[in-house]
Length: 386
Ligand SMILES: *Cc1c(COP(=O)(O)O)cnc(C)c1O
Image (cartoon, rainbow, N blue to C red; front, side, top):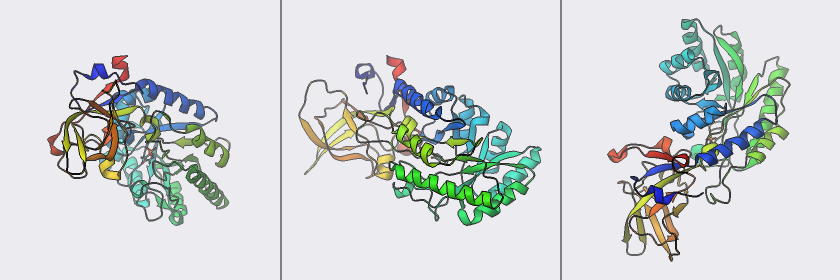
């Protein structure tokens, strides 16, 4: 990625920088993959990044939105997503959120318990409408990813257990204000082993067969999201492995004629196009290590503190060669976990240098907080500079 570093000089750091051309190319690749099959739809997972400019670009492609709160439903629709393409998941939907989604006329509630199903039925009944729902199934599949971002195991809070599914499905079919649309799955995030998605396909196939054998409708299939990205080599792999990902579903998911297949990718659509741009404030010599203290922190990008995630730091001010020096790159927030990376070799850092943390477009800006009364980060776009 090329950074317009000279144009950054007058800007207050830290800020997010988004390469909207790369986002556009990524969406092109995904749209081309979807077009290989009839009835395949993408619903962008808004929680990965709800920046209004990015939402406009994604909604303009005709993609739908995958939301996990009433606020996201409202934000998605306000930024161009057609209500009927909005799907809404979440284990704890409040009444006001359900009412907001009913009033907006969203495409589908992804329901996570029998108790929630009954509340949606009642609230829809009070409005004299019918609520389209899919049942979120907990497929009991462990994705090989960080424990905090695995969502598909039996003891996880998400979804309806396989043993209870048949009963909940029969109830959904019997409730007067519920329209049953199909099944929803989501096994986790940052999944790079395609065998995990293959296992999901196999589980869905077996389940569909079982339901049909009991005379129950399967409906449409929503396979969720979770495709991972390469955080280590942002320039060698500037896009996620979409071809291999969609190929798994083309080859392993049994799709009946007329059955729609929905995808909910978040991270893999937006991670690569974003970087957190910071400035070096101080270089501090410790007794046995050197710290590069930057003005960005865990309040703009919490993933390193939360998951020990790696975001490649890049000194984008260095034009001529400088010797490589090993730093712990840290932020100013009063938490020992406010560390971007430890013992990392960078071209010698000087006060005022710009350090960009790469592959920060997903779960970066959307997880920003005001801790330490820090202002929320601004954002700039390549289209502002080129
Ligand atoms: C977070 C989430 C996604 C998106 O996950 P990614 O790993 O960002 O692709 C999709 N579906 C649901 C239900 C989610 O909660």
